[in-house]
Image 1 (cartoon, rainbow, N blue to C red):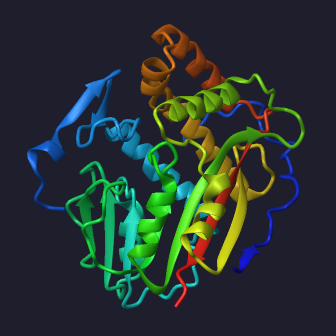
Image 2: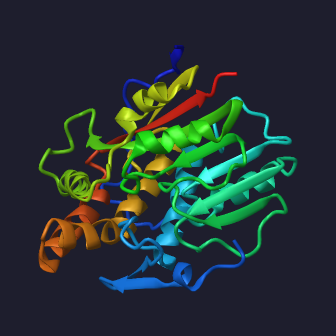
Length: 324
């Protein structure tokens, strides 16, 4: 078993002392009727296919947020769509939990010689237009995979809170990869921290993240898979395995221009997305009143705008190969 740890990020993120104290800018074709049905609650739209499997909305507001997260993660990876040592030409590629399809679409545009790029999701929210080598499938990846198509590369990103049985999912990935094929998992470690003590343990942002982890545990899903991903791919038989770790700040306080941009996007993620995170899980699972959730959401938005709170997420990328 070969496990490599890639170069770690800098020990500390340097603070831009000239940053303002507050941030003020915002930065398948044929489908059955059951797949196209939606649920409406908490003023938001949720998927109807296998209802409850995904606890977050899928409406236009959420789609815009997911597209922004794609841009954030791409920037964190220095404008790379993936880290696996893969030449996509002639390859079959699967994107698990494709969401709006933005990663698959960008892959199709960037790599027109890729043979096939399939985006899989519970919600049919992908555009009807796509590059010639891209197609979308509405399905539940936690069920037995009926597609026996062997893939050369499987990409799975930002699925925290969505999967009940990660080891089984990874075993299915292994079974559906060609020998020598690659799996890439990308997830944030959903426990925030600061390097200078500016994030109190009882902050609204920390309380929200803790509540999300607890709520997802109650419904049998993990909100924080990142710390276990390396172990799961080892157990599935992948070898070699490389682990990459990056830092994502919240806010425009970093001095480094790229981290400042990424932090600004993560800040918008909190300000615009907090309602999507908490609406269903905190009321239906944790039993909070709408008024209690509203107070939390307001506190999260206010903290996310403050540049004197230097909150950070770790972002983990696991790149693993199926042996020949």
